[in-house]
Image (cartoon, rainbow, N blue to C red; front, side, top):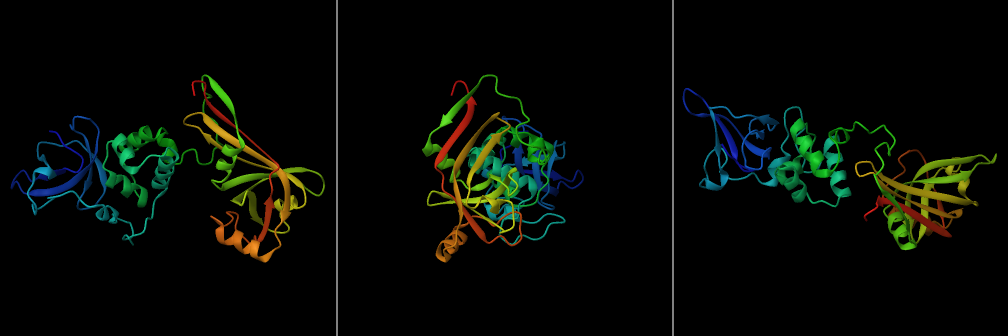
Length: 308
């Protein structure tokens, strides 16, 4: 028995020969198309690992005439968003589960398209789209292939390390520490996200706090509340740092900006910062005071393998 992605697995009744269950093959475990298969069943839309028995056969979609019952053609992408048991009907908008979000983030981090990721994981791009856009519980075999395709671990895709600090993996055998020039530092800063502000409080104690930030016209801007710790940055020389750690590859980078901080008081500038913000502060609450940092020095470093 050999199959291709998109073929249908049909299980027949031993007594009548009529199809009693069928489903689309969305994952292969062997390059030659031999069993087992990941099958998305047409009656429940669940995906399970199947070792076909003597009552099963493959219906090759490319060899069937149009209109053949039980799978004349490959499902179009729109059909991938149908709700399974216990799931709300699809509204047409993505509603990813935790695994789907982590898969999408890892794929974006490596610059991989869905098609390339699906090819590496030996599954259909449609099923990968389903995983990324809908709550799903893929099989262990599917997660193993996805983790391998994305250079990560099954535990990471399941969120096993969500509460652990980054950087607990092994160091590279031969690491190399590179200095980043100002242009590279600006490019990394402009990705936005979460950074850390190092300030001195009123009693002179040093404090480092995370903030959601934006980069607008070469200044670093963040929102806070007037009585908060980040607000203490206003009127002082401060340090601002962002970094990224790739545990799977034992690589990473950091960027450090140092410069004076001040409160934005001009209404048009406040309005512009608010309108261009990529996100609201994760900490919530009333945080309408904008603080900007104008870097006077900008430095960065990156850890890579010695042969790069």
